[in-house]
Image 1 (cartoon, rainbow, N blue to C red):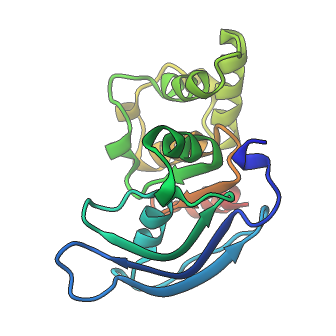
Image 2: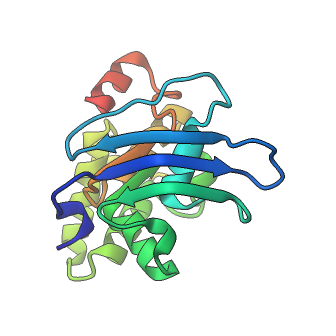
Length: 197
């Protein structure tokens, strides 16, 4: 059973704590939450309160030397106990991530279609090229980017369009969980509502 298809909570945190290297206090101190498949949760708070730290802790993207304590279960597994390959697979198959600034995560030498196609081909090696292309085009359309823009490059898009691409990439493998760090920041109100629906 793939992580994205299991029953039980998708994410379970119990008394989660995070302390960054050199910090005197925990950035997160005793966070509890349980998220089932199909549920939505928004973490709301002022800048610097630890919202992004939650995402980094769940995905084990914390800086080296950070301490992450408490119970952490992502699709039935504790990512802190996984080897690099298994953690990479869990991140790719079970969790989609939308970063605040998508341009820092996009390769300027790849078209937007190649970004999606590469992700799909890596995780769905049995798919034929036309299947990968069709899925990539469907993902673009789903976030409001015309399929005929498949060959366009990230620098040809506005910040909002790049954010849509980041959302399409996060949804590409139909993960059990999508973590979005301020996903609507660059989007206009109408598109933000459509994407979050």
